[in-house]
Structure formats: C-alpha cells, structure tokens
Amino acid sequence: MKAYNKIVILEESSASEFDNLISKGFFPTNYYFETITHLVFTNYFENKTDVYKVYPLRFDINKIKTHSSHKRIRQKNSRFTYKIKEFKRVQQNQRKLYKRYLSSIDFNRSSRIEDIIGYEKAEEAVFNSKTISVFDGSKLIASGIFYLGGTYGTSILHFFDPEYKEYSLGKYMILLTIDYLKQLNYPIYSPGYIVNNFPKFDYKLFIGKEAATVFHTDTQRWKRFNESILVPLINNREETNEIISEINAFF
Image 1 (cartoon, rainbow, N blue to C red):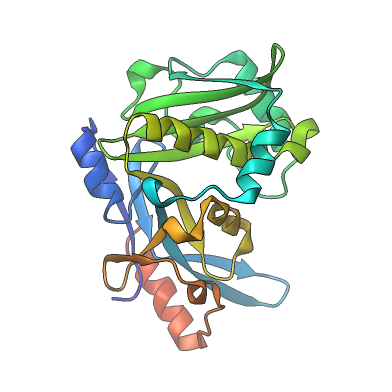
Image 2: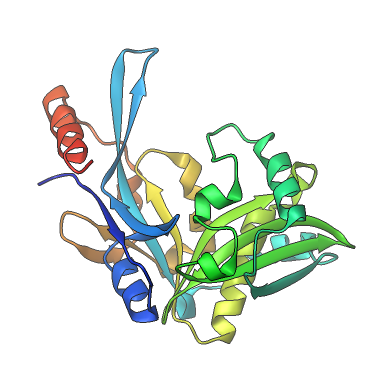
C-alpha cells in the first residue's frame, strides 16, 4: 500500500502512549492523533489533481547547533518578554490576537483556536498542554500551544500580531519552546511535518538540518533529513488515482 490516512482516538493520553504514536509518524491534532502519507489538492485552473508526499519531522535537541539566524531572531525579539505556563483555558486576548492573525494569512485555518486543539479548558484536554505567550510591554503579540509527552515536545499552534510580522515571532516561539524542552532534558522536538515540493512548510528546517530526521512511511523508519525529499514527485495519472483511492479508503 502506497498511501494511507490513519486516526487514533484515545480517551486519555499517557506520556508513553503520546511518545509511541509520535514515534510512528502520528501528530496530535484536535483530540486525536493523525498520520497521512500524502496531501491531495485539486488544481481547478489546470483541471488536474496535485499529490504531495508528507514527511513527519523531528529534531534531536542535543544536536541542534546555534545558527546565525537563531541569533538574529533572538536579538530582534530581545526587548520582548515571554511566559510559558500550564494551559488553563483559551484566553480572551488570545482569541482577539488569533482573529487579527487570521486576517493576515493567505491559507485556510480554522476560525477558532478551540477547533484546532479540540478543547477550550484544561479539564477537557487529552494532552499535557502548555501555552507560550510573548508580550511587548503588557500587549500580547504572539501566542502558541505545545504538548509534552515523556520524551517528545510537539508544537501545535502559533499565531502572532501581523503588525509584528518582521520579528519572525513564529520562529522565535519555536526557539523558546526548544529552550524550555532543553531545560527539562527532553531529547526530541517535533514541529509537525514537511511536504515534498510545498515550500510553505520548509521554514521549520531553520531549526537545523544537522539535527533533523524525517519519517518515511514506506519503510516506517526515521532517517536523517536529505534535501532530495523536497524534489517534486513525478506521478502519472494512474499513480495519482491510486494514491487518492487508497487515502479515500480510510475515510
């Protein structure tokens, strides 16, 4: 089987179950775990369907080097303050910030934070959830949510004030999250996945390609990141239809 889309629903997620599923290429989304081999988009302008290969991505925290881009981002944001704490509930200032963020992006996103993470309050959460917030004085300018397993830390959502776009706040929150995980002696950070020939996700590699591994769904193994996986796939009509059919079989 070339393609699949799988979902695992757990009433409660222990740290070991969380780590086990992430290590198999799953990603926590809403209140469940999901893994998919391909993204399929219909190109109505050219009357064709485009298929992109998905690669779950993770970083060995102890192998991440300090890059010049990291230093620049930290320097740009040095006048801001931040907090990382237990998630309690979605706050009103987060809702307002997320609404401003949605108005500035050019891709589809759920209209509410709760629709992405699957809950509004901590007592409804399936996962060990943390929230990260960045402030300019008393003004919330960026926020995000990440989950902790036993050895994995996984970012779920980042959003920021579009007026502060020049500060690379999404990347800054990734660096702060990695700092936090390092303090807790967590060995692995997962920012989700990258997608073959789909550059919108490539920004995650700024963390450090030297520490990156990707999950190959054909072998079910993690391998060191290689630039070749970003090269466009060449699928004929028969292969594309087979992939679409196999993915649809899981719905």
